[in-house]
Structure formats: C-alpha cells, structure tokens
Length: 199
Image (cartoon, rainbow, N blue to C red; front, side, top):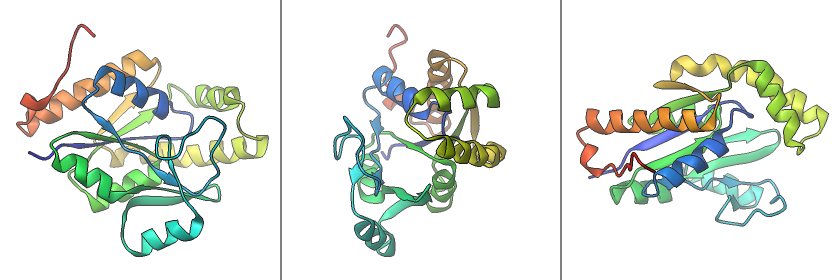
C-alpha cells in the first residue's frame, strides 16, 4: 500500500526545519525527503544528508528530463526535490515529508494532487522577522528580501489543506501528527501509523 506524501511549507522563518526534525523524532517510520540545491554547502552540512549539492548545469538537466517533483529559483539558487527517491519510498508503503517553500508546494499540488499540503505559519509577522534576524546567517539585504517575499507567501494559505500556527514547536508537532492520523483514517491506511502517545 502506497504511503502518503505530506508537504510542510511556509515562509522562511516559519520554523519548517525545526518542526520537521521534531516530527521525525516522534515518528521514526516517516521519511524526510532530501532536497537538491545549487547553493554552496554551509559549515557542517553534509552532501546527501542535508541536501544533494549539485551544479547549476546538473540541476537544469534534471529539470529538462522531468526528474524534479518541484523546483524553484530562490534568491539566485535552485532548490528542488528529486522525484525518484520520493516515489520509491512511497511505493514501499512509507510516508514522506517534504519540507519546501511555497512555490515548490504549489508545484507538488499540480504534479501529485494526492499530496497533503500543510501551511506552517508564524504566530505574527513580527515574530517571523525576529526569527529571521536571530538566525545570524543572512545579510540585511537578504533579510529584507525574505520579509518582502514572506508577505506574498502568507497569502497562499487558501491553496493548502491545513494551516498550522507554529507558536511552539511541540504544539505544532502535535497538530501535524493529528493531521497525519486523520489522513490515514480518511484513506483507510491508519493501520500503518506507528504513533506512541507516551513518547
């Protein structure tokens, strides 16, 4: 029985990475998809663990061969999801989480309409700005670009199946786990869910 593809998306600073890591700790059976990017690896990042770090030419060739489930040019670098690993894991009956931006999520909706889209939102725009500034990884120019883009992305939530407010990571994780149980019940695949309520 094929697994379910869950797409966790939202503006930069919404906490997608933190929430998805916490989800995989609570639910080890779920597979967190690895994206590909043309940007250079940051300190501590490992190829094929954090991202597939590939050249711009390689990425463009994969787009031409329709091998990307979704892709986008984000702040001058390509990001995207190779389709083959996602299909392979789903065909094994395991669920997959995609942690991607809003552009990518809407592409997935077009290419894999059965996917479940969750919009992760900060509790306020002021909190989003605070998170972006506290990262300490971006220049002021990049922060301003991210904030301007976030204004547009926040208006995309009607295209999603669920909206989750990430005020606290633990609470956001609980809400997403509830969505996963609901989707399994809806599709009569709840017997494959492996949730430990005491974990």
